[in-house]
Length: 90
Image 1 (tube, rainbow, N blue to C red):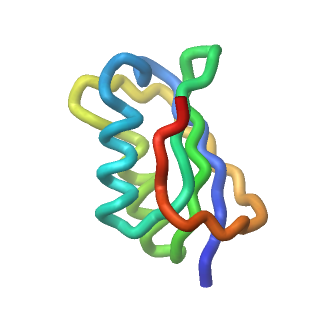
Image 2 (cartoon, rainbow, N blue to C red; image 1 turned 180 degrees about the vertical axis):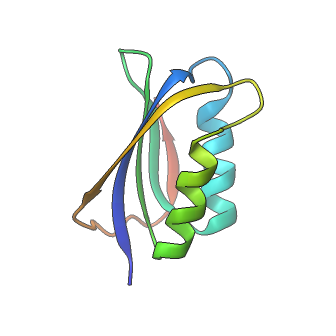
């Protein structure tokens, strides 16, 4: 069953290719949704996939790409919307 979560990643997560690496990981795991930088310096991710894929995705978000310094990851369940792919939002 497809589940939807909202993920907010805080720390040194902008300017370290976090969005690009997030898309690569999402594509690898079959996660649909989007990633975008927020004005407060965090990264917002909307993600939909099977529970196992989301578990692996969130686990990856806790470390992120090599240059990122993740301080906090907030995960909130939400209503599935039926994303067709994973995109980087500007």
